Length: 388
Figure 1: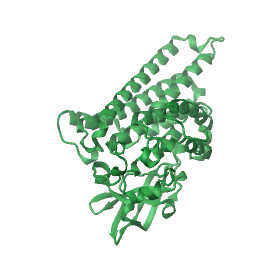
Figure 2: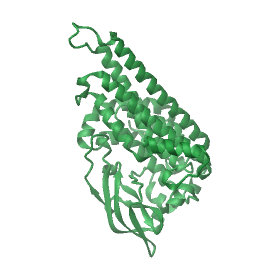
Figure 3: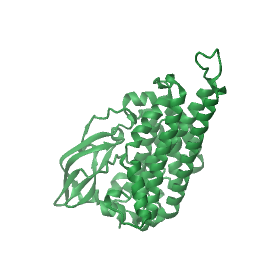
Figure 4: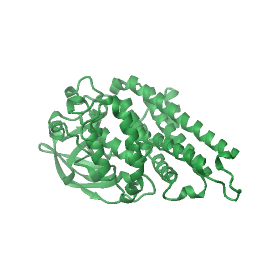
């Protein structure tokens, strides 16, 4: 594809791209990185510009449309879809920064590719004209493909986001995991790197405003509440993985012949009907929870920092529930698919491992998410550790 796709075409593009991601999933896992062919296709299609506002050279898609594309891509390869969608989301986040930084980043409509390890595990010490930044940051998804990196560092008692050229950090090749291999979520380190002030933004401004970059993008989604966007983008690959696994499992059950049965078809076994019905119901439940949360965010996300805490907790709980249900569904399918589904050629085993990895994300800790949801429902106060 050689030119940007119109919004009406994104569903068709995502479904076709998911097939290509599925074909490359084993390669992506071996590389521990998204294949360059996949990155090139996404860039040529304009995918990295999908969510960014038109005033930054983007397509200005709605959050619902953007999330739906990520979900569809994940049916082919959850790990690749996670990487692509977060790189696109981070371009949107960079629109919150100072206009001077945006002038550097959004050159002739090109989208910056920047991982954003969000935990504030570094230091930003004030210096004339900016900050001296040092630290070590984990979970830098997509760093193998990036031009910049956005790290979070402590500026005294408060975190500050700092945007550095990729050449100013060291990438540690540590990403050897059982699942989500293609995200290449390696470690980045920086040692006393000077970052000019316009390339930084306090975490309070990033999340609650005033955002200096928002004036450049009136009427866009740039000022939407940040935490729900992060949770929903992270949950999208889990739902897509479950949907992709359901399609693969159904096809497998149609074709499989039961061992030691004299040629009986697996599709005729009552146990198969039961397990497929359970999987169908569980995936459908996940999809409905997902759709309800996306609709809530579309309604109230424009409130930005004024989005009610009850709604923030509801989106967080829903995102964790989607991941929980997706895991349940794929566990049901893999348990019923037979031992041969464990071969590396089977998409079921990869979906299972990817979902188990996604489940470990701090936002998707089910006990924690449920506890937060219950506490907020009782009218008690949120805490910073709730990540709302």
